[in-house]
Every structure is written in structure tokens, then in C-alpha cells.
Image (tube, rainbow, N blue to C red; front, side, top):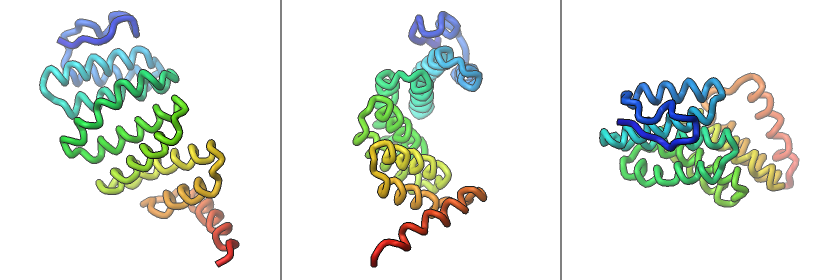
Length: 193
């Protein structure tokens, strides 16, 4: 039987005897519709149901989704509490893609909590893991987020280098990204050699 925290979105997902997949689908629908409290409750219920079935990777994925819903609500500390415990599970299972995504989610939560240095490390770890498993598009997102964080911290050259590295390795670039890549090469050509 699936259970979740009461009070987040009422009793909608509490004590419903639904398969974890159905709970996850309902939570994803709530998330897409912007009902983030309902999504949190649904992802918690799905995670608990997967845990009860011994499906630890899927449970970890649901906890990460729950963390993303918390981030949409600007509740970074709560996101950290549900995302951090998933890292050792995904690490022990060797699921590099989900682990890379989890580190990206962790970085976002750390950033919301103004823990910028830790967020930067988590974005780098995310990008590294996603590169190892061949997920270039996801790696691009992690590096773009890192670049934005570096800009926020006043590290313009570092941000430029990070974003350029992201574009260099991207499998496909939009027309806008291709133009941006060309523009970004100009400052490096102006630096003394």
C-alpha cells in the first residue's frame, strides 16, 4: 500500500492501493499541470510503493522527481532532504545516467539554498557522469546551468569557458547555438598568446 506525507496535497495519494507506475503517472501529470504540491505527494507515494516492492532504482528516481517538484516550490532544503539519500543508492547500482541527473538535481537544490560552491561541484559531477554514459544533451544542460551559476557569482570568464565547452561537445546545435558558439570564439582569439 502506498503512503506519503499528509498535508502536502490532501489525502489524494494517501492510502491508495495503486501500482507505483500509476502513482508516478499521476504525479507526472500533476507536475506538468503545475500542481507541484500534488506532484510532491504523488512522487512520495510512488517512491514508497517502489521501495516496498524492492525497486530501489525506481524509488530513487521518484525521490529525485519529488525533489524537482520541491524546487519548483522554491523549497530547496526539502529538495535536498529527498535527493541526497538517492545518491548512494544510484552509485551502488552503477546507474550513471540517473546518478548524473540526480547530481544535477542536487546542484539545483544547493543553488536554491545559496550553497554555490557545493552546487558548482555537483554540476561538475553531473556533467562528468553524463559524459561517461554518453548523454551529451543532458551534459549540455548541466554545463549550461553551471555557466549560469558562474555568471551569478561574477565569474564571467569561467562561465564563458564552461558554456563554450558545453557547446563544443554538444551532438546537435540549434542555429542560435551555432551562432553563439562562433561569437564565443572571438574573445579567445583576442587574448595574448
